[in-house]
Image (cartoon, rainbow, N blue to C red; front, side, top):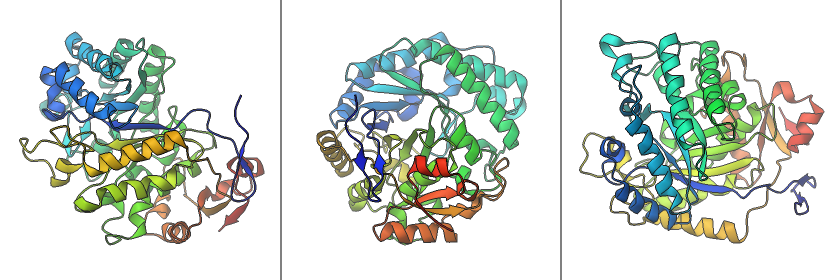
Length: 427
């Protein structure tokens, strides 16, 4: 039995959330970063999880390294898979649920590909049949290890797996949108077969929304897997266009969430704000807490928002060399596990939301746009923050209106518009 529907600003009604909004963090170990998987110290992990739980967070996303789990195409290390289970069990001690990433992959400017797909053994990770079969076996092994544990959520195939296929990558692996879709479907099917009850998805950076040549398309983003993931990083798409303090920076996450909503044919499809952070210098050190709150507030009333997972839990230790400068300061806690202002602000927000949750609100006004060829993604750049669509959307958002977005092909679909609560379409 659910409470009565909540009236929206337009006079329509929005069903309340079936489940509370989830609040989590991408787990960056305070000792040794992700290299700590090489010699896992479960006590150090427990201490990290204790500091995370103290902020009121309810889940973590973890990143075991692909080369350590599968150092040879035909060898998956049982000890490496068991370590993933140990981390999940440690999280349970602090009432934390866990989402497991599979093919790591790429993060924080570093690539972690196994040696059997690089250099002299270079093979395409998306299209080589033997490589894909090996990836399937790893996804199955991870899923099988954790599926019976009560505090697991599901799997993300890997972190921003499109990174290897984009033109800017120094060792680009070529693939087409059709081939990428087949790759996603193959790996998602493997996860689902081994773990039928999990919430499984794939992740990508914002090239998928803005760059015509990216082989991961908005269609892939919003139709494959159980949820659409959103990674909001202002230093990529907006910081070079809009100065410090400009509302484009704090409304960017909401814009991406609205794009995710617009591209989905299912108005109820869950959206997971899976990564969002406060990167310096795009966000000043003394402004991180305000940036966090001002970025998250606009999205909290999104009816189909599953949850928010901040990047990241702990700062990268200064003992580790050669990271981009911003990576050392993204934590909600420092490398000594002490809460930073942004962490304390998030804890306050979580407590307030648990006491009095933000009511879901359907957006009655939507800006329409034509994304071009949705099968290939050619034309999606119309939504880039340098364009007129973002400018028009932002003007309304900054004035206090809550604008949605809708594809031009959907503007004559009365049932679809009604399901999203859209009553006014602006061309």
